[in-house]
Image 1 (spheres, rainbow, N blue to C red):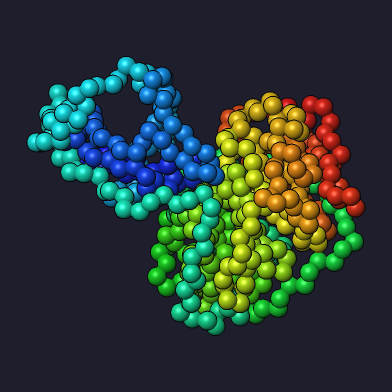
Image 2 (tube, helix red, strand yellow):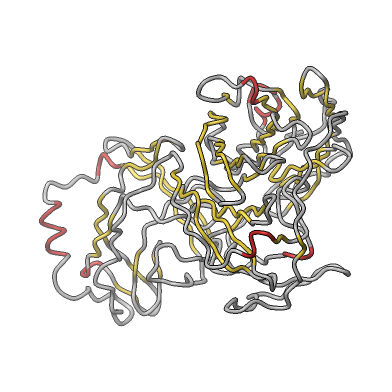
Length: 468
């Protein structure tokens, strides 16, 4: 990321989806002043990058540039500056322009590389034709930490400064929705969720029936709805809510919050994409009074859900879903288990996960298409544009493999970014529509039924669903 103005600065991030990219700690930039300038019409940024030829981890895989062949490179450009130019974890808006090109690395080697770097590292920046020379920054901030591993790591839970809110909760429960929608705790995330997927264009439904009884929820006292919260800045953009609803911003400064859920004690758990999972408690005024990071994993990016009894917490990255033991009273994590592996690496990278409230051994997981028109997803074996169900009572060692294990719960679903059971056991999905104009979608939804032998799809009529 390069920030332009009267001077130039760089920051090191790694993008893998529709959210603000996390800082990438395994590479450093050394700015070369003689090749760096800003004038009235142009800019040029020249730097030596160490650690930029190979990147990745065990979760998303590794990429290594081939020094003897052509490599695909890309750029993204935005006219809006980052909120904090000197901070490589700063929030910034989605790009205005994007492009790709190929570069032949076989023809760019130079035996005098070290000497050239040394010469361009000395003295003032070179003057550019057509304008005055700007003042370059002397060097980009150098990362001091190492890249996080693919496996999530739990951090010690600091005790909150106030404990009374552990007995209180907003009028919402983890069993009824995977995301916060209750009137008493509506949190605006428009300030930090600046790089988001395209808006939803359709809803997909599935019908499930069962005679099992849902687990009872803990009884907690409702909180008052605050008109404002101390120390929380006003929303950055105008907000409009439906009649009968209220909106108050209760937190800011989060890192791309994607999903918020509540446990049985009223604690709010938030998945912050490219950061991890945080837990937040409420004070008697309905505002937050403590926030603690409980999982640090830069690969977590969307999916977050709880078991009906709030004793198990689930979250997902692009390729993997994990489970942790969770204690709502102490707000501490226990043992970590891999539940699902092998989810498609590429395309839409968010993975919605949800636990059946009446059958807590069943977990649903969605994988979106890998393009606007993913024609291979017409086959159920592709493992894309689909929702699958897995019986955790039958989980093999090492977890399920998405493409080959589990039940095909639904397919022809371009990108289900949210899943939820309603009180009648119907499954609802939030369908993330196409990035470009598409023909009208026929009014057909796959018929999905809960059967004693497991969750199974009845199939799909020809000509309906994604990509048709």
